[in-house]
Length: 241
Image (cartoon, rainbow, N blue to C red; front, side, top):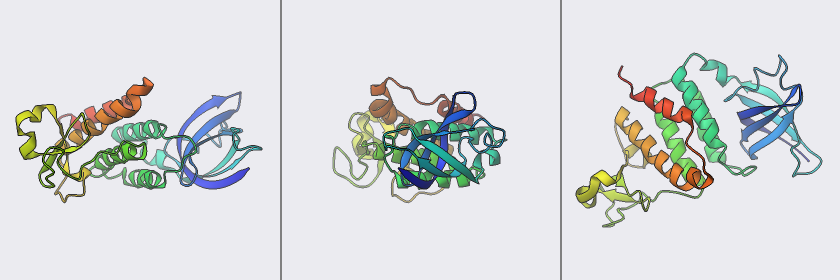
């Protein structure tokens, strides 16, 4: 068995004295792991940093085996954001959440969106919203798409600014009025509605929304928690300038 693909480094763990087990999010083969011989060497350590884009070839005798990976650096995203603490937290959170995807199950749209975020990490006004949007799409890819097409109570398709935490469906301003404090805010940029500049409040509301449903549907049932780096990122984004 053999394939070649491009991928983003999600994690690595030591294996033996000189090797590592590397986990990638690949374009065509999904989340995939393999043994990198000599992965702890001085030559390969910089290549196997979280967030780096690599060209990879995987080989194994049988498809169910761990197999071996040989990798070459394609783009050193990790080094490009090394001095940006917020971007590093965002990257760490993305890598941890991407590991929730089923192993070896392709998710090309999420892969492309991840690459877009990596390319935008030098634009602090853009990438936080992209990260929140990626989490929103992650829910859909995991089978928990939120229905934001119409109000759950009235069927209205306008002024949809809330989401029911019970049903995961949108709620209009009119229907939400009696109990808005029990609903989750729905930032316009997470939908197909046009919106102006994305505010800090929009970003926070988006993270609250995606975090709630990730915890409810994905993490909680597995007795897992949202990444610590994610909360630290939110705290940094909300701190006074």
